[in-house]
Length: 483
Image 1 (cartoon, rainbow, N blue to C red):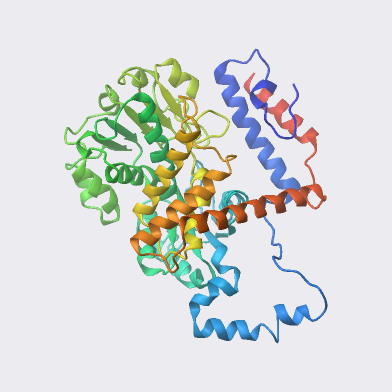
Image 2: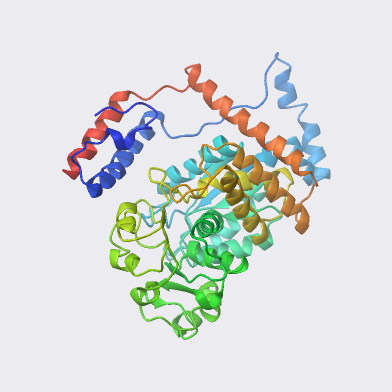
């Protein structure tokens, strides 16, 4: 069993005698073990690096006092100059109260730092955008998490950033936080768990339907889970032509429909109630009944691998599409869904085919919004980004196990940045107007510069390679756990 530093042959490094279930479990355990060891080795993922030089002693006086006084007064007289005279124009705050971290739930305020730093890492490497992880304590005096504390915090820090990326905030607080901040702030406020997941899911769905020979307005779609992600996915699907009479969502208490008085009576569930009134006129009794004959299943619910049953998948329509995107373990293993008859299977993980993950969306989308200094990110911008990703993948070729662009396809981020920027200009939410080519060129230049910086830090030894013994230890440990 050997595995090189690039981890490219992970599946081949596992012993051949492992069953498919054991292999899937071993991959998950390996990645978790290695992640913990690597984070300890490097002390996290992000650091602060200057973007300017120092060519002599007096440059201290240019970058700081007395010269910098001119910058302060210029911004005082025109706040919009802060986007050009500071890093604000390329800086995103990744804000979380860590109450719903991946599939691990409430991890305490600092428990979300690993994920938030991960977002910042992907923003920088994939999109050329600087990000800062800000994990905050949203608890009030009664110990309960208060969405107003998050709202007030973001309003206070907004003048330092070009955009806000909300992350891992439990529902229903996440709905109130996003909706209020989108209107209150004069910069984009983006909830990646909801809008990002919806954007990239729609992108994958568009191409999956093309391969299946089906149209979004004709198919019956079942969504398991009615949290921030799936409710936003449902909203974007409907906005992009889906038929509300053919769409069903399930939460932990059953299907959403106009008879759910428990949702109607809870003001915090206003997003879910909107969908109750629009969808599921048949009022399906349970998941098995709704999934039987359905064309599409989109699950963002309880991590599996047995949340979605094989028999459910087998009961679906011909050329069925199954998105099982719970983290860190999908609701059913991809191989099991395929064996049950699914035509296309997607997960949120990069170690399986068809990764439907926010990482192929938010770096480029945020870059485009920042370059035209957008005041918000609209649903129209998210839908445009979804089709930009789908179009990119279709042009280079799509197959049943390759429906969406991947993180290592550099150009997709610059293209979606330009497409999103043009949508912002079209909708009148941009501060500046650039051409598609100008946004593309600036985005691509920033992405290349970020990757060159990361590569140079490694080549010059400022970032050390992790010992290969660490990788071997994690792999050996994972295999022992599943045998």
